[in-house]
Length: 93
Ligand code: SF4
Ligand code: SF4
Image (tube, helix red, strand yellow):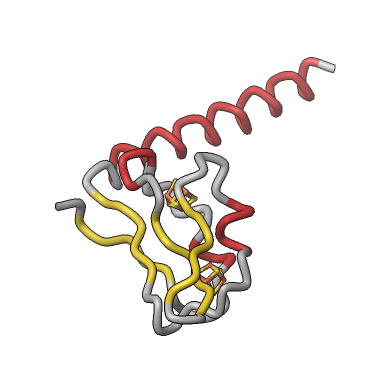
């Protein structure tokens, strides 16, 4: 039983320190959306738990947009959800 507790503790510790490392590494970055590549599928919006992204309509084209850049932690969770190469992390201005 102790092995289970120790293994779970190690996994949680690795997960927690990995998150801290990612946040520290990306603190000067923010998400960017290439409107020309975005198809408006909405997968990135569903993935972002911080509600940074929103869907907008522009010249009859629907695409994702960055609604609250200040809330973006640059965690990168939304990146693998985009199959169209429309998302990237850029330096925060
Ligand atoms: S990088 Fe993270 S916080 Fe920023 S938009 Fe993507 S999922 Fe949200
Ligand atoms: S996942 Fe990619 S294509 Fe889909 S809405 Fe987000 S940025 Fe656009």
